[in-house]
Amino acid sequence: MGTNNMVPYIVLVLFIALIQIRKKTNLDEVDRTYFFALLVLFLFAALRGNGDGDYFAYLRFSTYVTSFRHVISPSVPVEIGFRFISYIVNTAGIHPQYVIMIMNAISLICVSVFIRKYSSDRVLSLLLFLPVYFQYDMHAARTAVAIGISLLGFGYIIDKKLVRFVITILIAATFHRTVLILLPLYFTRTIKIRAVPGILLLLIAIIATEIISVNTFAVTVLRSIGLVSMANRFEAYIGNVNFGYAFSILDPRLFISTGIFILSSYRLKNRNVTENVLINSALISSLIMVIFRDTTVFVVRLSGYYTIYTIILIPIILKRLYYIEHDCLNDIFSESLRKKCASFLVNYNLAKTTVVLFFCAYLGVYLYRFAVEYRLYFYN
Image (cartoon, rainbow, N blue to C red):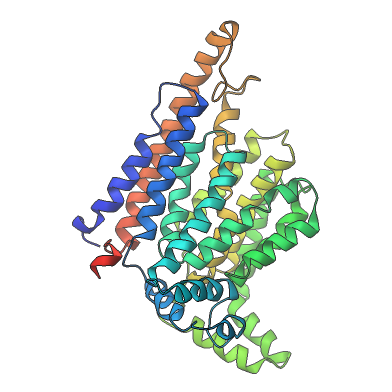
């Protein structure tokens, strides 16, 4: 994409990067900045009038749902959640773009609730969310909604409420069935995988998938159980030049996910249940990238459900790098703790600046390679 067409994206990234700079730790001020940034992200995605194929497919599919019969009928090739929103929009007689707007609103509201509840640095989490935002909210809104809703089930993993977690994932599946791959995360809550075993697991996965093609294995299994039609559709899908190309083992997304797993494993040795689930999610994200690397679209669609948790994990790592008991990031602390907190904040902000600069550079490369021209929908 040309440099001029990147200007809106660059402005957005710089805005989210600049709000990381703040002198006060007053929670009200942080919340105002945080919610204003969320509003900007919503408007940027909701008012867009361009995107990869999914954007235009959404607009087209939404026009097919003109009665409630279409909502409950699988004849429209999208999940029932999308069909229901399309039905509401068409019944109201408003522009199909509102389907996109509603999905973006659901996604960002869910992400906002998750960040506000679990992040120790909300505005930093927003910056870390941008790769997911550009990949899904801007182009694959159904997946973005499924990711967002699934985050609401995180607390049920921590509190050991399996039924409620499954119900949350099933609700998310009404927008994209791929979210079902998140179900195993529940059962990892008490499994503590250290850095070395995790790296060995990744190496085994790399070697195994060099010997056995996951795509070939999937087609063989489908045919062997009599699902010939599904096997044929699967083969056609992975054979499509737009979707079926391989995911590089040297892709920076794999290195970032694995690096976060390794760093968090070493830093958070005495991890609690929340931290353990977050660390495991980073490892599973890397495993998905390795196991499904025959087809990039599977990597992109599936790993996002686990990668999203790093927006909470990274602030935890930064905070624990210079750990002290008092929460200097958010609380109004007493005079006796000011010197101790001042030292913490200096070190924390230096580490945070490094993370911000790294992710801004990464976003610049990502947008240069993958972003499409930004334009407002009412100019189409």
